[in-house]
Amino acid sequence: MAEKLHVVRNQKDTVFRMLFREKKELLELYNALNDSAYNSPEDLTICTLENAIYMNFKNDISFLLDSEMNLYEHQGSYNPNMPLRDLVYIAKQLEKYTRDETIYSSTLVKIPVPRFVVFYNGTDGQPERQILRLSDAFEKETAEPELELKVLMLNINFGHNKELMDKCRTLREYSQYVDRVRKYAKRMRIEEAVERAVTECTREGILADFLSSQRAEVIAVSIFEYNEEKEMRKIRASEYKNGKVDGIEEGIIETCKDLGLSFEQTVEKLKLRFNISEQEAREKVRRLWDSK
Image (tube, rainbow, N blue to C red; front, top):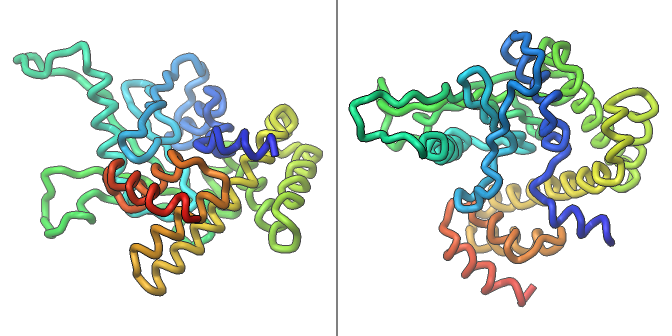
């Protein structure tokens, strides 16, 4: 029970985030993506907005390196709204970055180059790489949009993007670990599947140091991730079948309670899923919370 409560309190964490919040591994990933050879993790400055609740989402990792502001997001399900989400996020980041500058002067205020990457490892088939564009969401098509934001989405499931995996051992071994969890989960309880995957990977040198040093937390977070992904797939299937928003909202609230999420965490989930205000989400959750 203690492990489950621990995960709920830290439900923003994923195994991906746990791995790449370390500067050394994050720099390895950056170099692999950009064919660069930076060798000093201290050149990298983490700038993730830790309290981004007001934006309805929390970016996984944001960092500065060589006048670039990189926003890396891990996704277990396809989300075509990433360009819009990243637009909101980068606006807040740049507001923070330029808070000591005056943007009303005649002097040009310099800002870092924004770069956006989504690392996708959901179970729905997606191409090796694709570009998600903000302009795809515009209600009217325009040949030359005056505002554009592009997000590179990479499929990091095991067996995909081999060239990238060859350049980044940590990412490759992460994909191997996730693949084992899913494979074993098809024939045993998820708790047993995760335990077996962690034990085998540690023994075989796959994320060995990481898994051995953080075994309990990795197991707990992996179980939570798997269960959440499974329940969200059920909800999306229900949405596709009947299209009844009220029923979907009720399903999300019920699922969140089943997964052990708190009232506040459920409000966040509803805000993100339907892009509604905190007040509206809070009213919907409050109406159904005690009846579940």
